[in-house]
Length: 117
Image 1 (cartoon, rainbow, N blue to C red):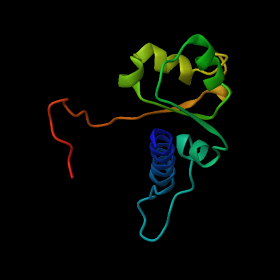
Image 2 (image 1 turned 60 degrees about the vertical axis):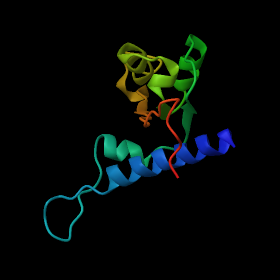
Image 3 (image 1 turned 45 degrees about the vertical axis):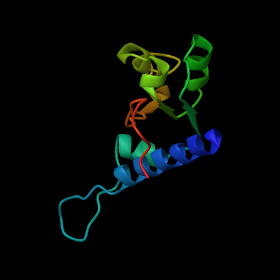
């Protein structure tokens, strides 16, 4: 069950990214600007990685092999520099291997609170 929820969350995140990046208007009525920059990169994503757990060096190396990585920074105790290391790709000086990183932001529930119905 946990795996299905993660897969569904990943699908939703990718769908959100695609919709957000693909629906930019040029400001003129009835026209849509062609995607550019990050928007264009989002349309070209062939494979992605989802990891809501720990990020040892080996996992970061695997992330560099993907175009998009989805993480949950609060669950993995990640900080700004950890995410930047993933974004930089295998060669920090080469922007062509940079990785798009989406951070999952969820609502935290306190342990004593009843689940919502």
